[in-house]
Image: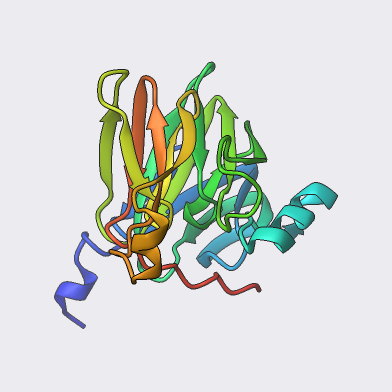
Length: 225
């Protein structure tokens, strides 16, 4: 049987080392030798001796998820083998975190990560408690973090002289040392008259970068498996 489908571009290659690699622009491959973590339901294929177990978010995580509709539903993958992860054909990227790094990421954009990384669901400072979607996962430690994003992301540098305003529905994440606050770009009167649809943004100040996806529409909540 012959087809371009069977070319090396699409063929799963044998594992050469444990850990996370890009299979292609829409999926990540993880060669498991021990333990790793991934979004529940994101596994699209695997081979080898692997076990998948739903991971509890703890009481604090469940409460925050109930309040905001956001969260980081995870599963632990254990054993020896290879697993492939993807979600709705979103673009996939790998971030290497080193000791001292801290990256805050919206839970909807986390695909998988090394068990050596630590994460905590935190309130975005300056956002108050009434805004949905303003609880993010802060990752620290040494390891690889697999992210996904609708379309091609935009990475914008932030500096003391050039703060950045981002739509709260479009932001993927930012370096955790940045200061955050909500910024209202319309007057109450303008909002009552219909406004521009850009009433409130997240203001980021300091030194670092922010990652934005090319869509402002509120994303569909991931299915639970």
